[in-house]
Image (cartoon, rainbow, N blue to C red; front, side, top):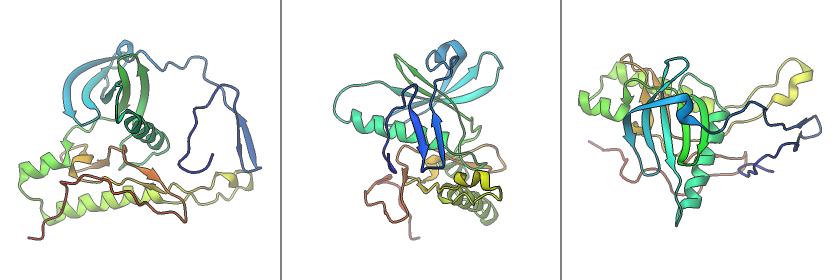
Length: 226
């Protein structure tokens, strides 16, 4: 397929990794990709963006709380790029696992929208924390940036080859560029400033010899010189 290219897998498709591994894709017999409201109860709204709304939800079988990001299904201009951004976000979140990157629990494609069930960041956006505190202390700022650097390093890092020759095909690069890191997309788990990088709608996976050339991000998000 090539990097940054995608096609929906069909049951029975063969997946080959170079000439070293071949797999047959099968849909799990018990996999449910719809029915979000049968498994979760939505509570209050936590936030709203251009393309999606975020709500607090509770899993009915466990009572555990999560955040759910709901993308309304629409038609018209711009829908294609919105869907591509959603597919990219799901693809990135399904392929990462790190203490400083928001965790995806489940996805649902329902008639009224697409739902992404995500780890709940209890303290919300870093932006609101900064507004509430007016400014951050140097130790707090250092703690935040160390975690951000660790998360970003993970996103672009390379899997090292394993000592076991039977698994050397697992080596690959992530090369994920977020492209919209800002206080609104950095979430706080607790008052101790444990952070999670979130919102991968503009993320891109780049090749070794390729660069990102598209101007993107948030135009109003900029640094002050004073």
